[in-house]
Image 1 (cartoon, rainbow, N blue to C red):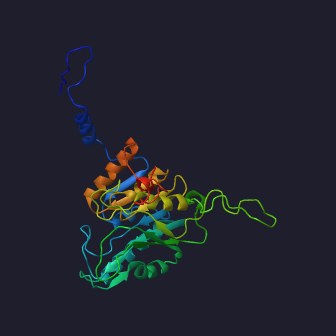
Image 2: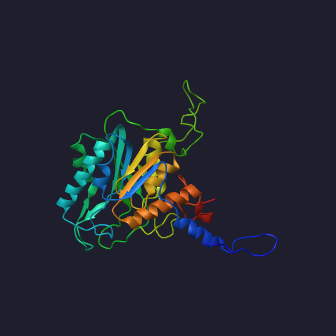
Image 3: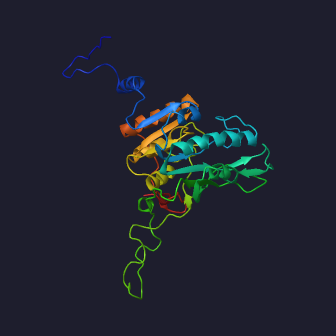
Length: 312
């Protein structure tokens, strides 16, 4: 195709910048040196991976409640399918690695009065039968969600953190948070006058207050139940080292992969919906271009009672 040029001192193509960017996007190849993500079912994907090749497996499986990416089934069949996926995840998990399975509740029926079934309780035996060791039940607290009328509105979910052995990677210093009293010192004894707290900050504990991804969240895509990147970052930074591999077998739009490559790790993932995988690749490309927006780790939760919500 020939390109016509404007007349004048500077010759520029007639293509507008927006058109050039669109063309560039069309010819983009979904490849990245540290990323492998595919549109396929997770058992097929997992079976293609080597034994003990993943340092961290972090995911949030469907809750069997009828979201547009899942087909509701009996709780018995749901647990059977989860068992098959968990077995493959244990096989590919590094001997010093961690599995973090983030779940909420399965609701028995569609009505407001239906009984709820905490999935962490139902899934726990599936991990224990492989000899995994539970290190923490991390409570992820958020402030927005569906408003219930016949029970208290759910505002937390649970991350079950398992390891294969007692010899596992854990880097606490990389995820410390500011101390409540950062300059507190011993006032008596042999350490009088010295700091009584860690100068790097305190252990964040097992209750994490991180906003979930709703309509006005900077990371929001079409996915209805999207991981916030900063939630995964805490797990990536504390449970892996640079160059390690991170896997999400229910990847969605790739937040776990973004958290991995953002911090110098390799990102692996799959999803049965190609549309979500395409969005994940687009987010990877945006990250490489420097245009992907993510909520920074440690940013305070918005407080309407503070100037600018407490944000600088």
